[in-house]
Image (cartoon, rainbow, N blue to C red; front, side, top):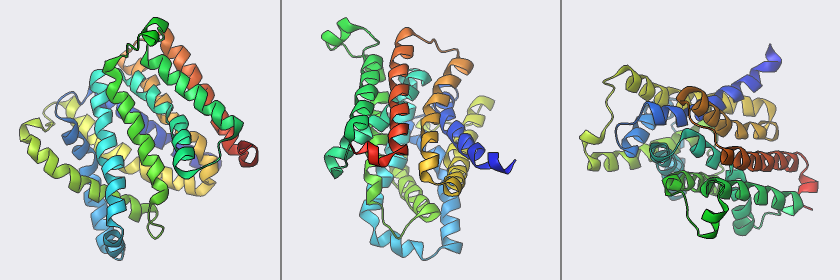
Length: 301
């Protein structure tokens, strides 16, 4: 059973993150995106604050000395990105939103080359071409006439912004302070992210807050506060640390896969031809990227 422990931890984390799209679309159709994001991270922020205060008190001085870069990371990764997920599933299907996120490795690779001069190589360019092609198929619903007239599916705009914001978060992660890692780093950005969200949520007013006044909303809020925000990160960190980041990397492809599959199975979302075509291109880009990551020397050629 031990040989399955770490893969199961990574799969559990991926499933928890994939479930955000379905729970966000089905159970959290009340309340503003900011309040929903605050519900997601608020309990975790309290837990992390207690952990750091009692067991890692030295972390606070490191937070203050690296405050501005942590503020940027928290603003994008903890506050803005989750809010865009809720905004996206309010306008489009969980399947669409998940597929856009699946294209982020290609986006990250392209901008990483531009910003950090990271070598791309032939496999990298193939990954980018396949991933962006799949994104265009989704954005134009597989309609060539829509592409020619640039008639975009505007109800997917927040899904696209969500994918771009996650890409931005991943691109600035290399700037994270080296003296903060693991739980202290995650705790720092969660606490700062919640501090950003609180005044914005209060400015919107308490009437915009989702209340657990039905079993569905109550379960959804409980799920958001526990699974994708706390348990998933603990499971992912444990599994990734045990088998190594390179071996854990392919599991990054699972959350959008789970999100899309759950949207079809639980919400009866319609699987269209453009989903299959665009999804196949994105899946091919993920496959090529996995091969590229497995052979870094060949990837640079």
